[in-house]
Amino acid sequence: MPEEQQIETYHPSFWFVNRFKVIVIGLVVATIVSIFYISFWSAPKDFPVSSIYNLKSGQTLSTLSDNFVKSNIIRSDFWFKSFVYIFTLGNTNIKAGNYGMYNKQNVIDLAWRVSHGILQIIPVKITIPEGLNSFEIADILSSAFPAFDKKIFLNLVEKGKYEGYLFPDTYFIMPDMSEVQMIKMMNDNFNEKIQEVSFDIKKFGKSESDVIKMASIVEEEGRTMETRKIIAGILWKRIALKMPLQVDASFKYINGKTTATLTIEDLKIDSPYNSYTRRGLPPTPISNPGLEAIKATITPTKTPYLYFLTDAEGNMHYAVTFQEHVNNKLKYLK
Image 1 (cartoon, rainbow, N blue to C red):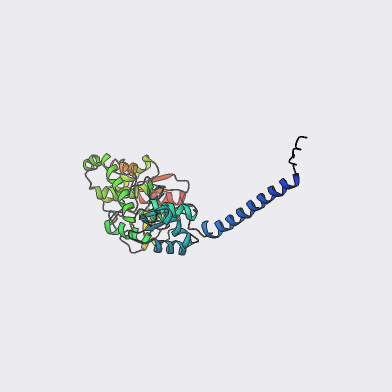
Image 2 (cartoon, rainbow, N blue to C red; image 1 turned 30 degrees about the vertical axis):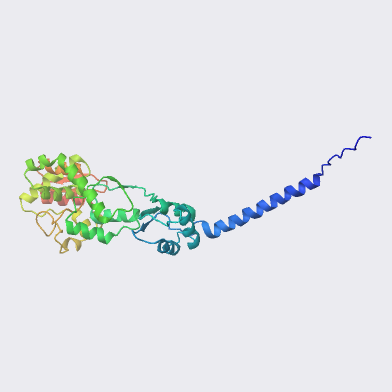
């Protein structure tokens, strides 16, 4: 009699229990990993986004790790050093440089970056409009770069006599650039652009210094090439007649005020930049003019006018005599 074959019986309950165990274990492991990641590996809540960290040459891993913890860049000193150790095969060799912290990054990514010198510095597009002075340029740069030092920048501009020679343009600036490098970049741009009109400046018969000083005023007082050329003609004529220039734009450089906010007392301020109480050009340019203003300055339009003003709508009004100028004030500056 043949042996009776045993038939394996399928028990659905057995399969379900095993499957359930696997799911539970998976969820437990996932939860533990998540808690572990959040507690030790993820970026801190106060991660300094959009900052630059300067990893100096010779800095040890322990010092860097400690600084990262204090700066809220990492949560765990232990895990950061552990991952660096793994990525460098035990050499703990970290690369010096300026590291861009533009977005939150976990401890693994940061360990990989310092192990391989991945700086991730991204240039920032900055536009410097025509007619801004160094104080206004410093404000723009300060807003764009947290590490930018306005005091250092302005001291360098004053010491190097760069006012008027920081060419207005669109720049792509690396966040780790120093104040010295930023000034050099803008001044180098000026030296390059001025070549276009250097021959015309010599032909005009005025020094480049005087041309830039006048152009800095013309840039502020006129808005079109036509009006700038007329204003330049009036102001050069005033210089020749030894008359004060009497331009309101100079007060923007003295105390930040414009025509609309000037008072009688402002006009009496004792300053070498006060064009109402001083004859001739200011000691330095009062803004950084663009190429169009420079061109207008050396190609002035000859007119019989000695006075000009701008009304609230931006329209220019000229006068030959002082009385005509007073009448224009009464008529257009109400």
